[in-house]
Length: 357
Image (cartoon, rainbow, N blue to C red; front, top):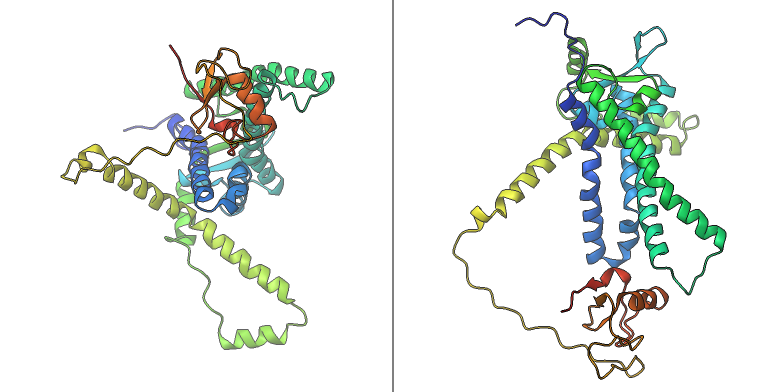
């Protein structure tokens, strides 16, 4: 087979797409873990609310370590890729400290800002559709929010279209950059060469092990020089080595995690569940919610909303079992956070749309 005229260091489209989507695909998993932890330990609910900050902070620390030690992000290193800087003369150079920080901004800061803008756009759109009458905003604030809701989708579409153009040009071999951000910071991603692999093999064999314990002579010399090296500095050095150990072995955690996910998928698959089991007893229904003496009284006509006492429009159901107009109960929950009939705590997220005949 002949490879004349083919750049063997140029990654395929599938390698680039896999490395680009790998880390982002782990974000829902972390959010699910934090949400499950919050259900079992309500004191950790703040962690679930700060899932994006926790995830991208971990990505920042992990990618910073891999950029310093391997010249690539964690996902790029996972697929045996590396980053190089393209000089003004087209020459490929290794990344320096400034290039590593530019790469970190593109890898961690930009995706974090996009995630926060997406969430802010969704929340602002809901606020404008169903305004909270108890907290009115000035006309200027309302205008700014409406402008943001109108402009942000256009800006996001333009950027995603630019990403699509770069990816298409990369497939057609019309461009060496897979994304506009890497082009903007004059960096390029390529496969590890044979020289790179041999250098990695000589310096990395399997999972990284912790440094061996110092002998008695080194310990004695360290204690003799404690006047020059502070205890805080030594503790920081130990923590730094532990952090490097965890980062270097992160890819093995991915391997184990993928194996566990595939095992759980097999274990809970319908084919594996087809075995004799005792029939499960249907649990009794929960007790009927009782109206609170200080809550709203229910109208005699069941088709009326207990809040506005008018025929229900866009009926919405609360966990207590009572049905209201969607607008009425939405504004009530935003202001009081309780069911108006039972006075039990309730959130807007607990509303369920129902369809009446």
